[in-house]
Image 1: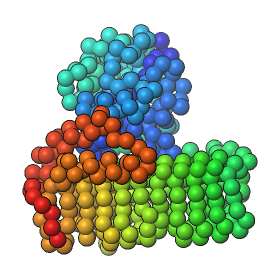
Image 2: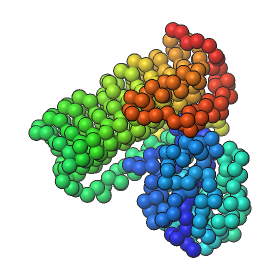
Image 3: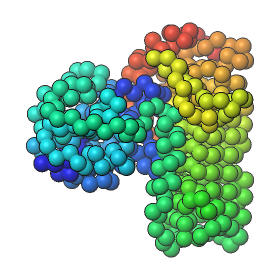
Image 4: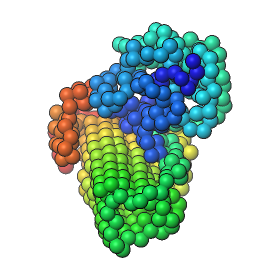
Length: 435
């Protein structure tokens, strides 16, 4: 067999550089450009006809089986072909990565770059014997490489090394993804008085979408895609390349530029060069730029994120291995799932805002998951009670007609336990929050 005829398996490396986004999801679920890394693989010929097998942290297994019903999660027995192509989610299948993987022709041959596994063509038995079902990470790239007989070194393949790359590479891929958009008849309702700057064929309006009067669609730098059920209210301006996801609403007098907005989001104010995953709200005025926002986030009126230092210098971020120079002059914060920001919240550039955290005032530090942050208002860091986090999630999800399933609740409980050491190290204490 070759890479093109083998069943596909996706693994992930240490996901710490991608936290807090990866606390509640597999790395391959993250949107990069106009689609997830997983979908990028499935849309290539490498995806094959058999279900993709995703190997991720064990505590995510049940929740991912619900979110990705057409994949197999942590199931080596789901590999039915004699051979399996294992790919690293840090290397999206574009350019040199895709070419290198296509060229894998022999069993037990692998592509590496910069000491990292890009992909390997292995036997089914190799994979099954490497699986450690009881470990935190069920598949270890180092262990897989021990079974490889031929290494192909491809230097300087571009990878996604942390959340800072997710933002910049997403914007590059969004432009290339949409460059191939094919014009078709507008299926939604476009009112008179809508202005299109550039070629109208670069605007796609999905079924049931509504574009109200006095909306401006600027496609001179890239297409604008309005998916099914999208609503653009009067006075808003959308500049491509841009995707507004299914059933999302952009409120009056809003400005959205060069961004990906997921399903059922609520967007107001100014958003540029940013990614919003599904079901998140930025309903009111305020600025978000060069930022990656998880699911089920709610940003109160006036919430504003910095994406540029006063010195115009490179933004640095803290990781467990030390401070990283991102090489980015423009970089906003990254927000995990279910973050809630009160009215008037401001957040410094490059900050990590942990999942299920609550923010008040000016946020100058990284915030651990399940933490109430109001340090600049004179309050200590207080841990958010687990039951409160779950109940808040349940309430918000019900407003979108969604249910917090038992599997997802168990994942939240496990995430809370896993991050207890992180909160303790940051000085988060138990107690009641008061301002």
